[in-house]
Image (cartoon, rainbow, N blue to C red; front, side):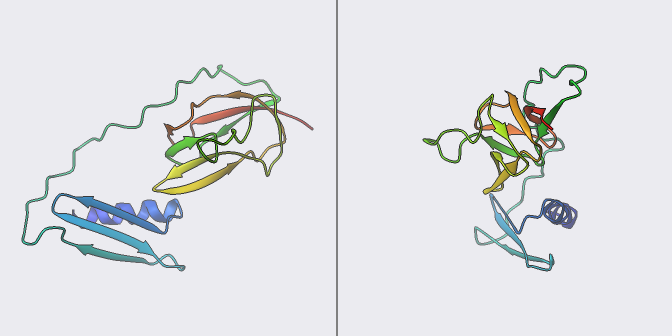
Length: 158
C-alpha cells in the first residue's frame, strides 16, 4: 500500500467522522485510528513473516449498485426526499426480527429515526429531519446505498 492511498483513507475518515479503519489483505494488515482531536494513529503489521509482493489495487473498483430510482423529473412542492448522507448498507429495522423504524403512511418529525446505515461496521441512525408523512420507501432492506441515494419520500406538513 502506498502512502498516497493511506492519505486518501485518512481524508475519507475525517470527512465521514470515522474513528477507526482496518484493512487486511494477503501479506499485510493496516489499522488506522483517530484520537479525539482527529490526529491519525497508523499501525501496520505483517500478517505473514517475510516480504511478500502485494498485488496492486485495481484501477477501478466496481461501484455499489445504485438503487433503482423511479424519481419523477420534479417532486411536488410539498414533497421531499430523505437521502443517504453516506455510503453503506441500508437497514429499515433495528434488528432482523424487529419491525421497521417507519412505515408508509406514518407521520414523522425532525427527530424520528427512519433507518440505519451501516458504514465500516458502525450503525448510524438516520433521522427524518423533516415533519410530514412517509409516502414511499425507495430502498429495499439490507441493500447498499451511495451518498445522496433517495431512501424515502415524505409529504411535508406545516
